[in-house]
Amino acid sequence: MAFFVGGGALFVLTPGLPLLSVMFLAAVLNGLLLPFILVFVMLLARDEALMGPLRSGWKLACLGWGLTVILVVMSVVFVVATLTGG
Image (cartoon, rainbow, N blue to C red):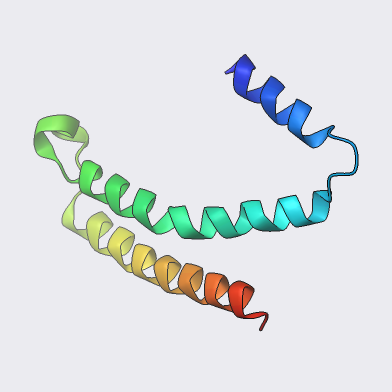
């Protein structure tokens, strides 16, 4: 963990680095990765062999999948708007 924090600090302290562009590109990358991570987490939350008695019930699963779909749509809109300049 310390390696990643130190590497990030060295990267940010690079002279002449456009920090706003770096932050903006990091947000775009997060927008691209978030849908994949959310789907994976939702699948894990419903796995009875993995979660046992802490497994998500059907109400929570429906709510989670609904929010995942909304967030996926929002992420796609964000990435498209970012890449097209709109």
